[in-house]
Image (cartoon, rainbow, N blue to C red):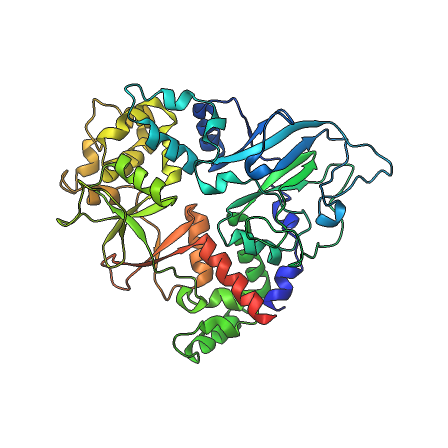
Length: 456
């Protein structure tokens, strides 16, 4: 089956059947409770709800949760993929909740960066979660997709900065049946996207569709396509790459998803050359503020050098320097406890990551205790000088997930899923750890979409 046919023949609703109703949080919940929910469920974002019609949804959205026995619809009706009631003449049920926005760990990170000048940092954990909506650009909009939208049509927004969307779940009396919804460029557009994104809808329940769901689907489909013919496909992909001309996507000749995933990340066009980074010796709060200013959710952590300007902290380009770790927004979920939040001003990035590693064994409060100098336990530095925060990053489980330019696209996707990360750093072929680039989930979805559209 061709790549385009594969992606057009599956609906996004198929990807979330086993996920169940999403975890959400009321607008009045404190940041502390929202962070604990994220940690408990291993998620990095939460939809925020409020009583219907009392708030203006992010980006003017109006996404409602109705009584389970009610009909579901949107401003565009069933043709836009949110199904109408199966009972003729049924009246619309009462709206119980309105989603007013999405708060991610990045929003919380930005909130912390603005809050640490106060004498008592605990106040940052006690403010209502609704105050954090919109700290990052993605939180300014709340999107939903039709349940029967094709996977191919979902790739446009999900490869251009939309990391997660709400997906209406059909209720028990309205099973998930119906054709895949074709979305054309004549559809209403939102935020520059033209394929199915909606800001208005209602349903008895919603779930989250995110980039990870799409990556898992691609891997499963490629495996199903390959079956017992793995070596045959591997040979074809290798032959294709060796006959390609320089300066082009050598994967342009891929005929199926399985063949595309057999190409290297460089051949497939998935490597992003710009890498934002910070030295391990930078204060973690300075790094957070730099990430906020650049609106990035993660940065590479580099081996410190004498040329690093710590008195004027800023993000640097990481290409050509030695990678020792990753600082991501999800790391800040650990700061749901006051001990971690209080410790942030005195920690470097290297100290912070090393302490997080120790916290896996001794707990967050003990690891971040002010009575234990960073990195909290002397055993962490048993094999390296305490003055080397870069080497501390290498201790225990904080080793960054990396690949090479010749690594197969499918293998890198599997690395990201197994490591629960949204980016895999591309390093040099030798063992130096020198950064070459990065492969993000957005980059992977973009290159799959471009290859599919190239078939049309």
